[in-house]
Image (cartoon, rainbow, N blue to C red):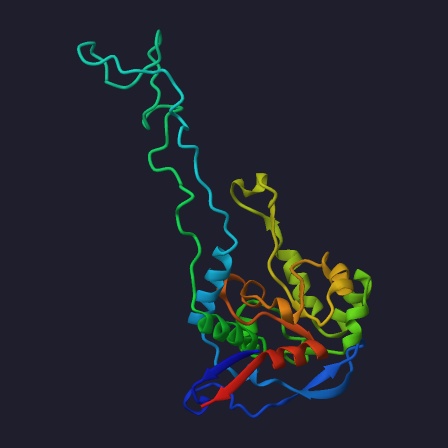
Amino acid sequence: MYEVVTVSVDSIPGVEKPERKMVNIYDLEGKPIGRVKLPEVFYIPVRKDLVKRAYLSAFTAKLQPQGRDPMAGKRTTAESLGVGYGLARIPREKGRRRGRFVTSTVGGRSAHAPTVEKKLHEEINKKERILALASAIAATAIRKLIAERGHKVDKVPQVPVVVDDNIANIEKTNEIKKVLKKLGLWDDIRRSQVGTRIRAGKGKMRGRRYYTPKSILIITHEAEKLYKAARNLPGVDVITPDNLNMLYLAPGMKPGRLTLYTKSALKAIGGKFKVTFI
């Protein structure tokens, strides 16, 4: 369990008080079948500065160090001819005037090549990371932040969207598509589909030709079947409460992703965070 201690929300303008409100639980037909209280973690003040730090920490943790061969550009017999020949003192191949070895020549060494010793990971304190994670979760319940990210929320009945646990048994893409349409979430997936474009630059040649905007995030207690059903929908991610990550909750360092929770996943998230309002 994470313990998150925050300041009193009474002194923070625009932040809801910690009295937990009730939200609807929807079935697969999009009809309310019950109500549940949102856990206390959804009332944490959203700290965008911490969300940015935690995102950069999670993103840079995945980067692979890269370096260059220390002998790159140096495998040559070229030597400088010295002075007195009316030529620059650049190492040249024997019998030819082609320069080698130095950085100003074609095929020469790189001046300041990358090294594996360079520190890539942006570290973050543990308590900061936990508070940032709680802030990103709280942002999924604020419609204004979700709309600012560009998500389509006009037809969404409430945020966050809480669905009955039966959604985890869906195995077909066509079935999850029907459920998302009834819950008013399909417009955001269409936005992601229309926004898919060819990436600029050399990434096109490196296995990432297309760029797809993020759409909805599904947090479920069991992801095995639902993941196979939703993995082909543009911009959709499926995770469990054990895999909560800033890369999913706040893509691009912007909190407020449109999120769908199952009833059991919502309860599990509430059990992970112990919130004390002071």
